Amino acid sequence: MPRIKWVGIIRDIDIYQTGVLPKHAIQLRMPRDLNGMLTTALPFVLPPALLCCGSVFLKTLLVHHRQIRPLWIAAGAVIGLLLMFLHELLHAVVYPKDAYVYIGIVPESFAAAALASHPMKRKRFLLMTLLPSVLGIVPLVLFWLLPKDTIMLNSIVFGIAVMGLVMPYPDYYTAYQVLRQTPKECFVQYEKDDVYYFE
Image (cartoon, rainbow, N blue to C red; front, top):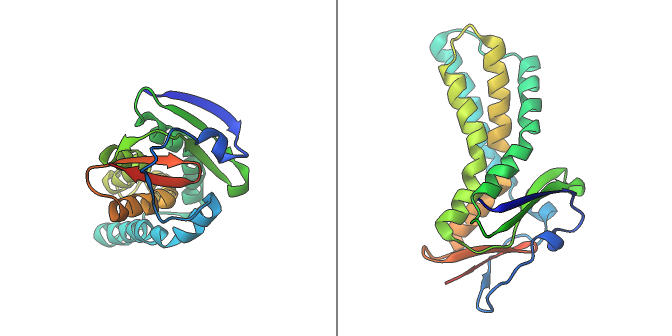
C-alpha cells in the first residue's frame, strides 16, 4: 500500500507531482494542463454515455416497464459525485508501496485529484488509470439485475452508474494515449502536468 496523504486544496500540481525522472524519458504528446486535458478528452464522454443510455433503452424494451425517473436519477448522480474521493483513492491504491500519493481538490477545475510522480510498469499504470471506472460498472450491472418494479432504486443506481462511468473520461483519454504512444514493455510516470515513458 502506498503512502497516501490528504492535502486539501491543491493550488499547484507541480508541488505534489514532481519526482525523479530518467534523462532518457520520453514525454507523451498530451495537453499541458488539467483544463486542456478536460477539453481535449471530451470525445471520450460519448462511449460511456451511449452505454448508459443504451442500457436504459434495452432494459425498458425487454421488461416493458419504465425503469427510471429523473428525480431519483439526480439523487443517484449526487451520490456518484460524492464518490469522487473514492475514485481518487482507487487511483492511489494501485501505486507501489514506496510511492507517495497526495489526494486533494483542484478548485479551478472543479475536480478531485490523486497526484504522484512514481514510475510504474505500463500494465500497472493502465490499471491505476482505469480502476475507478468500477464505480460505474458495478452500479450499471446492478441496474440490470434489479427487478423492473423497483423504479426508485433502479433510478438511483443508474445515476451512480452514469457518474461513475462518465466522470473518468480524462482517465480513458490518458489510457488511450499510453496505449497508442508507448511500447508494451516500459515504465510510465507522471511528472508535473505531463506523462513520460522510458524503457
